[in-house]
Length: 328
Ligand SMILES: NC(=O)c1ccc[n+]([C@@H]2O[C@H](COP(=O)([O-])OP(=O)(O)OC[C@H]3O[C@@H](n4cnc5c(N)ncnc54)[C@H](O)[C@@H]3O)[C@@H](O)[C@H]2O)c1
Image (tube, rainbow, N blue to C red; front, top):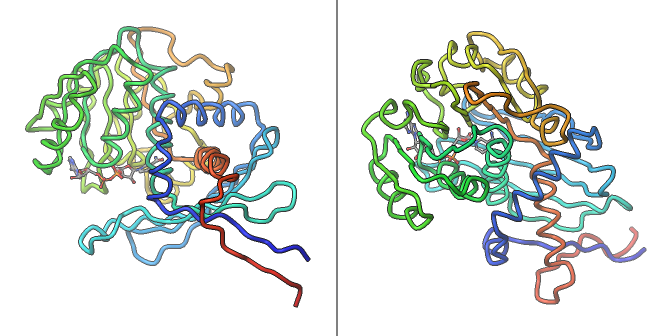
């Protein structure tokens, strides 16, 4: 038997590679297109739940045409913050699609953060109204930050950003860190003042006692994003959108069965992959209000993880761990 070994990459190992956001967007866009063409095996994510507000999900995906496959095993524990631990943590495994053996095991937190931002940017590329230049952000944490970087890649004309967060420090850090992107950032004192009338609205908060975004603030032409699986948007806002888009309708239904979309599921206009694959058009008019609630698909993680593996696989200075050496 041949020895089996795999590459191990920590979060810091991955960060050192400096993979540009533009590259992540291109990879995820290819992945969504493959999905839209029906060429990806991406089963619904099973999970275990050791606390009422927490999960650990298994997320496998296989790209038939590209020959790429792997798994994310990711936990989300909001109470970790108090313990000095990240809310999102876990592992990616990249497997050989010829032999099945693991080729690499790596941190999944950075990949989760950038691929989610990339999905929003791709949604904006296809669905934002012409001339989009303003964005309202509610929640200035990891996603609020990453997504602005990704939006700037696809919407270079974006110049006005209004932000609100329950943490003043998070808003101040956001402004200090991101004006270098060439946008003017205004720190706001309410959700309304951050989002009302903006060309795009992004909510990237945590579990909420009640929704945040009211229907009257979601103006004609606006493209909205809810990263909390519907919880930040009032039911009439969700149901009143002209188009509802998601990266996974199966997962949306599953989330609904678990309590998301308490006022009812909106009618699906299209999965994001169908739009990227050219099967459906993103936006038809400058007046449409489009809401995207992308849930997060394994295929978005796996294609980025595979790229990370490709970048290091021939290097002599990466950690290789032995899985097995001999028959027993
Ligand atoms: N759809 C996906 O694929 C996907 C992927 C990753 C994360 N997410 C979700 O995105 C959301 C944000 O994740 P994150 O990693 O950025 O979390 P984070 O903890 O880094 O940031 C959340 C921010 O929201 C702020 N916040 C909390 N409640 C608020 C409120 N009521 N009003 C305004 N601000 C509020 C917090 O102060 C914090 O700054 C989470 O709900 C997470 O589950 C979705």
